[in-house]
Amino acid sequence: MIHELIRDVRLRNGLSVRGLARISDVSPATVDRLEHQRVAPTRSVEQILASVGCRLVVRAERIDEPPLTREDRRSLAFHRAVAQRLLADPASLRAKARTNLATMRAADSHGRSTSYFDRWEQLLDGPEADLLAVLLRETSEARDLRQVTRGALTGGAGSDLRSARCRPCDVTSSSTRSGRSPTSWARTP
Image (cartoon, rainbow, N blue to C red; front, side, top):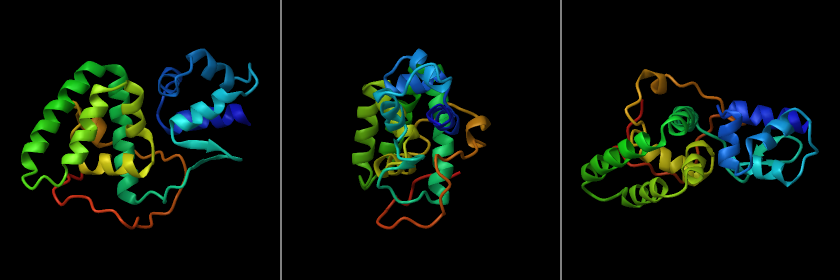
């Protein structure tokens, strides 16, 4: 059961064994051994699931987060493709993202999104695992960051990112989340 769960979570998040290992801070061999039942589950399972915002119950489920809206699912699918680009060419994507953030910051004349821009810059300057976590997790902070700065991290990606399909960790209803106030200029596809 655990081996199927780890593989399922990895595939639904569009990650390779190495990609999941990188954001989970475990070795690729650990992920591979868990997926192929060559090792007994240990704390690594909790660490791997936590890296994509899940916990082990009977199945992987989100921790204290409201269901994803339709727009949240689209944004998450888009950013999963961005995560693949980050894993393939981190320096290029980070450089492009910094340029895009500067442009978006300049366009935000009322300064409503300054805190989001500041947080993205911290993530871009920090460890890759932290940046990947925001791209892949379904937490409120990650959702808000992705929505407000939708085009910032595309890194010059073409239609392959715009046509990304959603593969959420849980199948959820598309009920509207309360308490969100995305800025009016945030781009949507």
